[in-house]
Length: 339
Image (cartoon, rainbow, N blue to C red; front, side, top):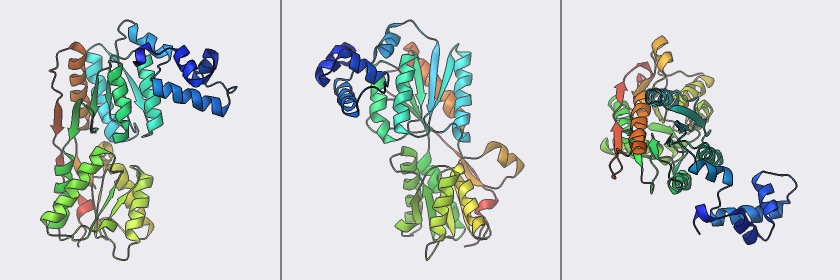
């Protein structure tokens, strides 16, 4: 049964309850028992039922609204993507709704349902991970155009604007190798995120090209924030044979990694070299320190929103497009430790 034809009565019948009980579950009423709530939610999922507030949005007139969904609006990289997207949207006469999923799948699903309900005409989204697949397919079922930014999701046919993570990571690690380092650590995020996979591939490729065996204990998965950087670097420093250089998956992780090095009385780059993806715009002006692969974050948002508008207007080809933006290799003091 298609999602558009499923009614509240169908859900009630499948769950063995009244339509009023289904309504109470949808509206999070505390009067429904946990067992009944579970049966109703299972029936909703199996039938693909969409509450009427979402269905009404689909049949209404144009909203003049786009949405951008990112996993961490506090990350300067995504902040710049939002700025680029908003500029293009505004010039095209659209408002832009910003949603932050906090890299949580449940919140991403909730946000996507809210955007359907708000009748947004298109969405630019940096998905949480590969597990966002069903959320994106939900947009397809409801006919909401979307473009992926920064991250691809296997099995999802969509336009994508992303960076050249594999080659960028390879260049960063090759630079460390050229400085004489042989034991190079990596602090990254879950391999369920495409950028993390690509950067790990670049790391592995650089080591292989230099004839260096990859040591599994030198790769640490953590959260992509300063707290994750601190934890990841702490684990590397506690190894019997710690690395002499470290590549972090992004700039926020690098900040935490530097804090962890200082916490044990050491310094970057005097005692350990450090490189990362993405710059911190204003910090680099005040104190240019980090060696980075700087991505044109604002251009991600600009191009992604332009592709989205072409989809909305019917000007895009049937073939989905992938735009790969090169990064700029910026050498600064943080990589200067002697091996």
